[in-house]
Image 1 (cartoon, one colour):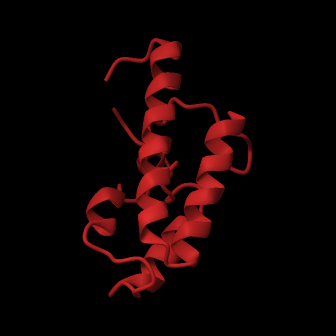
Image 2 (cartoon, rainbow, N blue to C red):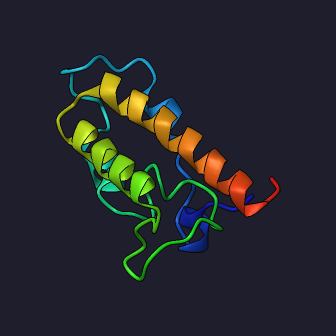
Amino acid sequence: MRTYAEDMNHEPFDWNAALKGLRTGSPAKNQGLLYQLSSEWPTCACGNLCSDLPRNIDAEPCESELLSLGISFHEAVDSLDWNHARAVLARIESRSAELIAEMGVSA
């Protein structure tokens, strides 16, 4: 399954690996990169999901819950709240899986 990031000519990014082991409040070695990637819809946690998920012209997810989760994810990265970022990422992945299943898209 292609990610939206790939469709927009970006390398897919493994957010789970990037967030692994980070302690909340502590800066990441690649903090600037994480902030930059999380601030753009094609490369954020939502952008590294199935390209079949509907998006608007600004690349934002059309589904309101997924949109809200993406914003929360960026805010968590911005505030170095890595625990919250991991929790939101898990919710993004779960909600995306639900939407993909509802759409009948196969992996």
